[in-house]
Length: 208
Ligand SMILES: Cc1cc2nc3c(=O)[nH]c(=O)nc-3n(C[C@H](O)[C@H](O)[C@H](O)COP(=O)(O)O)c2cc1C
Image (cartoon, rainbow, N blue to C red; front, side):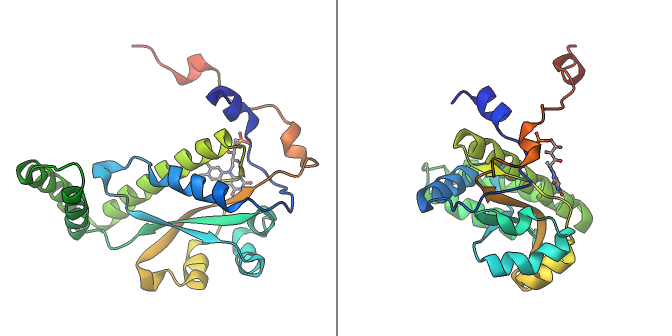
């Protein structure tokens, strides 16, 4: 499917059908998300895949009861690392050494730059920076899902502290940033009939 057709096809589904995604669909979508770009390549996030309906029902009240939290095929929880420090750069460098045969010199220069960037941020700025990377992964996942005819509904309306508590994320040094049910739309979902509401291209793009 052409990417524009896919993006017109997708919408934020409020009513999912009971249809489960097949394992290969889920695997492909997660692999596509793994390939997301991130600042300095540091990928400071994890994705929890919640399949159990009971577990999703436990979370739903903390997302203002939004039905789609428990009714899709799976719930993806995009969690951001809270342990952002220069060790993350070391983790990346040791992985990069095993790939591409990057020279120690070029990696050392990269590490210095990336560590400098991290050291220049205070705790709040690091958290914001890390969350921004998580949203890039979310956006990429949504587009890839549309290309694969998988439905999504990104959700920012939830209580992160409650999610973190229920999912035991504090002890894993993670925090919930955004959640996204995935699955197949119910053809009766009234939101599927609406036209896209987007400012026109001249409003979006400013030629200089
Ligand atoms: C970060 C983010 C948070 C969102 N939070 C919610 C939400 O809590 N509940 C919901 O139903 N939709 C949520 N949406 C979906 C938007 O309302 C939707 O993307 C927007 O209205 C455009 O419609 P469309 O996605 O159907 O094209 C969210 C979207 C994004 C990107």
